[in-house]
Image (cartoon, rainbow, N blue to C red; front, top):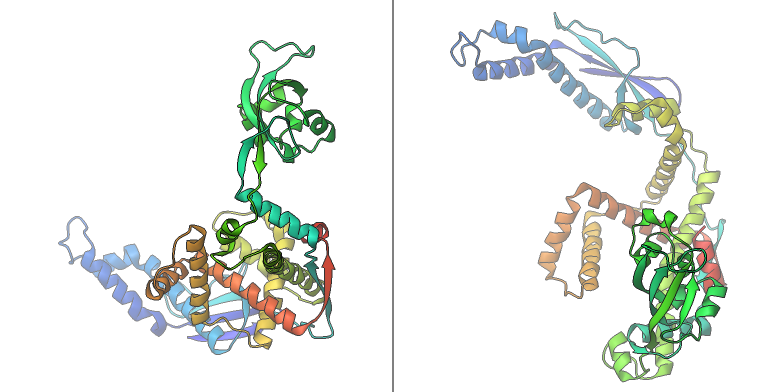
Length: 450
């Protein structure tokens, strides 16, 4: 076999594969003889069908299969031995006829198109400056976190009047426009959480109300809308558009959350026996936990900012026409050129990022070793066990489970992506100049959601 490369330009090339009879004849003959041994045709004993008849019936398809195998093997060998980096896979040259006669097989020549990985230069060094946004863990945030912890371990008690954070159990009855009860209308008992009532006027009307009090409300203003409103009224979501916006709500019960006391019992539940012994230590521990919790989000924001800058400023030329044709040919389901064009910009952006990240990894010798991947996967499994309150198994069993997870292609890709992002973030923090910037929690949330 002979493979010849012809460069079209910096991003496109052709590979011409010449296949001679000695490259495929023995394999074709062996396959046809195997067919002959298994063939069961009327008038012939099994295994005694004339070879000529077998060749006539199966020869062209067997030849095509063997040629396909031989060509693919030769292409992969050529690319590997010559260290040719390509995008996608080789595809048959458009409108190019195969040179060779299947009726009288001799020498064949196949021509394939390849898209070449572009040469790129990534500018990322200590000269690059980025903000590293952190949450300012102040007294207000610590107080809120401690209140949330006390609420989590608190208990509901009956209350006489509706308060800011109470749960109000009531009966909802649908009304007509004149506020009379609608015949055949909705009647359903449910709960309203005062914390989630955003309409200030409605909230003001509810505050201070007592059991048996009645108030006319718009159900959409005492719920989150959509599925939440439908569940509150006991109807299907698609039925909401036909219901009244005036309901009589009769308060049947009011529940207040009695916060757990700040004592040793709560401290031990939260942090283990004896680790926190007073409120001062509690506040220090909560502050440290909050700072640790926000690090992942700060890292993601940094990575996002670096991503945006590199995508914008790194010149990455792609063989667009080749890639569009490769997408069309490699897609499992039929896809139109219009569909490809509509999504190509997103695809190209994603591919550019893969090339930029790959260039950084290669230039800086960043590798994901198999043993590291296994250890990382074991860590994920340990966290999963902890979420369900279960102890992790022995290391031998945990390792076996990790290797089994990695045999799943989708899971393996997901884990490698997670590790690659982690390594990339570590590289950024070690490479660029970071400007620590503390912001309030609310400002942090706004920045993170961009």
